[in-house]
Image (tube, rainbow, N blue to C red; front, side, top):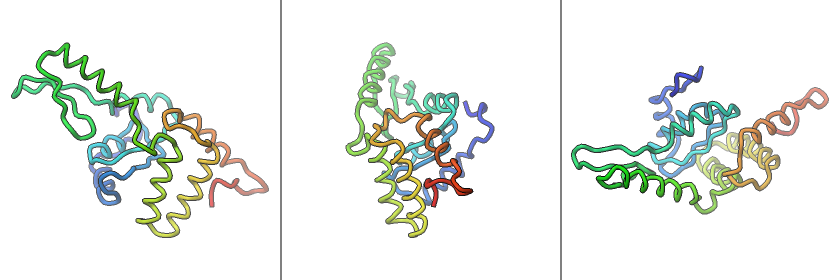
Length: 186
């Protein structure tokens, strides 16, 4: 899966960083998500994840990589799937297990955590974390960048956020006015 990306992040390094700089339940933000290594490790460590990738090919690989898949356990002679850190028993019959799996995945896609169904909600949660756990300067820089991004995308639902929105914002940031970058950066 990851062999298609020229700069795959080492999983052990990502794990150590995530465990060092966040706690269970935090949102991990990755502005260059590639094939989803950071997302995978964040989810395995009970963190939520928000990532941006401008290349559709890499985004599609990440989505496929992160999708929970049913597996068969010989000990119990049953099918399981791991969702949100919990193993769900799908039963012994493979056809029925696959039907249950698809039902679970459909429900999972439809349910957004309260307040985290918009880009604004997720970024506000990240900013609250940054304000409480990072230096004042780090928080101020994050606030400036993310406020600029929110002004650009408006009240967009998280499910509607596409690579185009990030690229459009980045393009607007690199517009040069009188020799200076625009208001996207401090």
